[in-house]
Image (cartoon, rainbow, N blue to C red; front, side, top):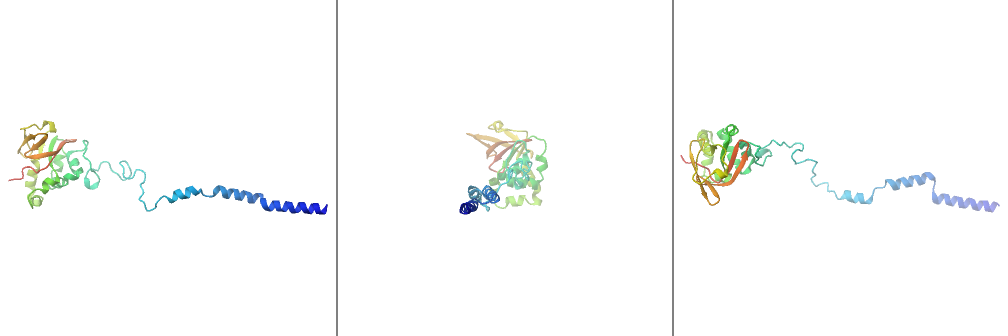
Length: 219
């Protein structure tokens, strides 16, 4: 009997060693449950911390820090829209940045912000750059503000004239008192010889036609 009891005791001890205690088993199970998923570690490693991130709403209209009312191309606006006034649309167009500066220098911003309506024949940047050397620089000086104002006023006509209304041979009187002549060559509309390169930019207080030349610079 002693031998039998001794043998049973040895077997029980071996079984306990191989199985572990209840507490040890519970701890082992918890370790298995809390061990990170190897696939998750790999997925996390795919994110490059040096790659610029984008927060929700960042860079979109309506996101924090974005002002939908900004129209000056220097501070975020870049699109001409019919809900904006003529001056706002000029300032929003990067191809009209020289005209924007000229309107400020001449003090015509408030005038073109009025109810109107007006039709603006807006010279693109290349039109100003094509002027004889030194002409634009001279016009932008304070002493020549009156002459600059006269020239810019000769790009504005009272009333809203769509491209379809710019008929061949039509005479348009500008706010500066000069007559502009409309001519058509095929599908091209010309105003005093300046081709309209973009027509019918609708604005809240009128319309803009972008032209390739500065009008009436001689005096």
